[in-house]
Image 1 (cartoon, helix red, strand yellow):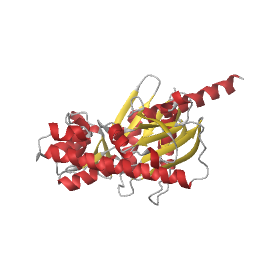
Image 2: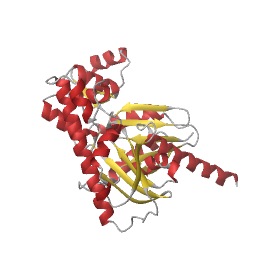
Image 3: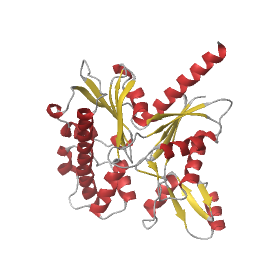
Image 4: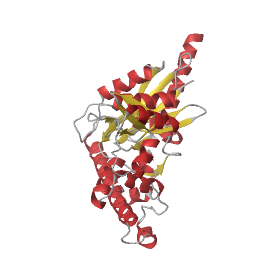
Length: 344
């Protein structure tokens, strides 16, 4: 059975024809006697990883724990879309998350996973990140292939436009961009800002934990990025009001930064096609899920200053899982081709 794996900074999402599984890509280290800690976690059926005498809670349980105990440090195996060089225990944690989501391959199964494009605003390579993830997935018995994150999104979001347009995956660590014409990618890049950049700046400005910002961003019934809503429904002076106000400000700054870099890439790239007609921009990824996101994009987008004509700006259906579904569609085609070769 073909599988697609979205290897995101905030979430890992695995897609098959019948299922969709998600796990937060976080962990925290539990102090105390390792034996006692493990027994406590086993009683609660909480997933953990033990490495060099340290016990780490993995995934959603780690996130929940960090919200309750504000002094605990929530850690990420990945940072800015790539493996986190500051976390020595990142690899066993990723191995545990990937193993939980994929399970062991049965017979010959293909898994397509995604990597970011090389960032244009940071000196970082993606090769090591790509190789490590490939090795981890292969240990579970899969035939492993890779695709860029924004291309996977384009496979889902641009189907109704003959795979022609711009696909932007709004991740936690990075925003990935692909310019595609009839299924061929002519330009892809990433910027090393995303939802984490918003969360970190909001937490710093509001004097609260990043976990609290994320909780409000994901769960608050009051959060709406549209200008008209802010002064009507929020109680000025409250912590939630201040955090929501800051979230909106930094979303505007993030989208402006992204669109400015996209326009610059169009103006400076030789390989961008001359589109005969106007094309759509489709957004996906967890950072695009906040209510009012497209309105903020509309405020920041200026057609007069953009180098090509845009027909539509929209969110892909089920934006959080779109990249995983794009990876899955590639895996299914690979398996289909392999079966045709074997039967010929």
